Image 1 (cartoon, helix red, strand yellow):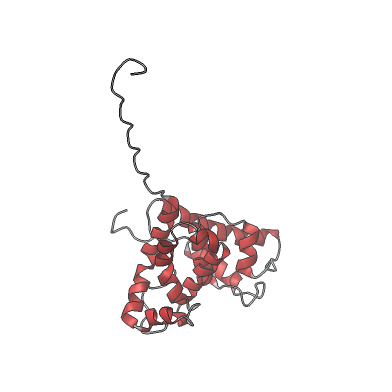
Image 2 (cartoon, rainbow, N blue to C red):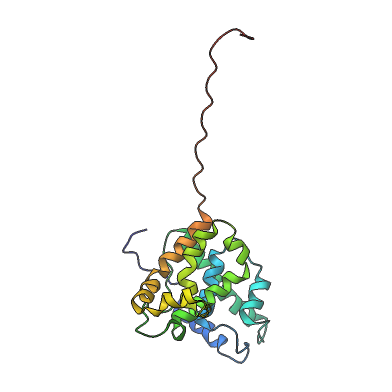
Length: 212
């Protein structure tokens, strides 16, 4: 990946607006994730070490089945979600960073009051769907990679260590800047197997007659 490669958008502006309008409508539970949180949720599903059935993540994302106008709207909205998730997979598979739907700076505002916090909260909701699978392999490494998402999400503010991480604005800004690279690092963690050590060749037995 070239260092100058721009982040890749996962949906075009028109598609994002369509999805946003639907999520903000009365057809969706008011406590369901908004567009920013949905984006984070679907990126987490793109990274996840195991596939989550659509029926499971749709129910989690929308807090049940949304009140779609008809089958056509259902196909359109869920299709946009699937496309966003698949585009994230395609970008990460080729080593590209996904474009995130916010500026990578807090501006002296607490993360939980910004789209950054909303996105990270949505991302962590995606992790919670299969939390055991996420931490099954190299738990310490995964915890390290997920730490900025957890700290910025606002979901762990009651934990002193998390609160301390974002209390310093300079440190919090640094965590935000890491997010795109961490997304790729997490994807590679689950998709690129570690190199196995080469087998040690067996020593040859000295030549001789059988039984000697």
